[in-house]
Amino acid sequence: MSQEDREIKFISMPRYQMRRHALKKLLKKAGAVGSGKKIYEIGYGAGEIFRLYKEMGLRVHGYDFSEYAYKYASQNYQDDQIVLFQEKPKPQNQYDFVVACEVLEHIEDDLKMLKEWKSYLKNKGTLIISVPAHRKRWGAADVYAGHYRRYERKELEKKLAKAGLKIEEIYTYDFPECLLLDRMRDNDYGRKMEREKTGKSKEEYTKRSGIEREFSPLIQALANPAIWTVVAKVSELFYHTDWGSGYILAASAKRQEKGGEDA
Image (cartoon, rainbow, N blue to C red):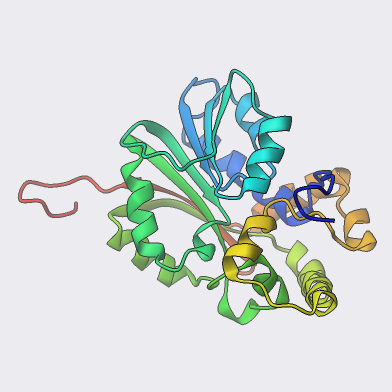
């Protein structure tokens, strides 16, 4: 059965729940709640994150290059408050928030993409991105998702600065959960690739990564939100360490001084 024909049931996996918690915290800090501001979600996958944006009173635009993701999200989440694009739009300086979670690592020329995302922001707008952290954590889950890389903190700081963006806040999330589940994820994805017996391009892996729900029964059982609501709250204690397996950050466009130099 093809990916298009297979019925997809979204499951909020633990890492997603941890990331969602951190994203909500960053958006609150940036004044999103009840603001009616405009947010552009890039790479929305299954689209479950739109529930959070609606709760916060945001107006949502979204784009995902995966036809599978667009089909699923448009059928399950699109309404008067949510506008989804099937073809990539060219927004310029029109969004208060631009969010791209687990997207940058899928893009070969990540610096060029950061500059493009910056161009979507209004004056004083906020870019929020999340990426997998630490090269030493590279594993089968990265290959299966179609990643080009994992990131180190200094590398992120330098790339955002080159793109004309200033990091306002950065968290290392997914700790202590990663100590338990990272190895389980890699083993699970390693077995999937072995069963498939055929290599896919990074683009093919990327297109299905946001909606792929074929996790092992054990990992699905561990995805109970009642567990991860508590763990996510505890994980806030470690946001300013470097122990987690993912980074999530909020950045703003650098102001230009006279003469064109970055402030």
